[in-house]
Length: 101
Image (cartoon, rainbow, N blue to C red):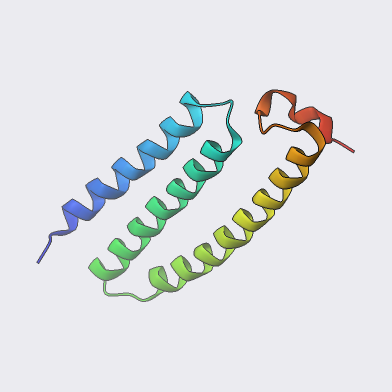
């Protein structure tokens, strides 16, 4: 059986990769969205790890709620990205102010 420390280390590494993906690549919006999803998945892994360790189901239920919100966030983000691509012709973040109403 895998110990809890390995899951915690994996979650922290995933979280750091998500942070690095956001801060190191600020020009491509797809990489930013993928990095946000990686952050959310790392947090969910930590929720499940602590839920199993504490023998409580609240963390697992909260993880399902967070996954639902993350799916909605991805759908809305990709819809905004499609509209932005139709307006500008590229998906660079530099001219994101053009879609303000």
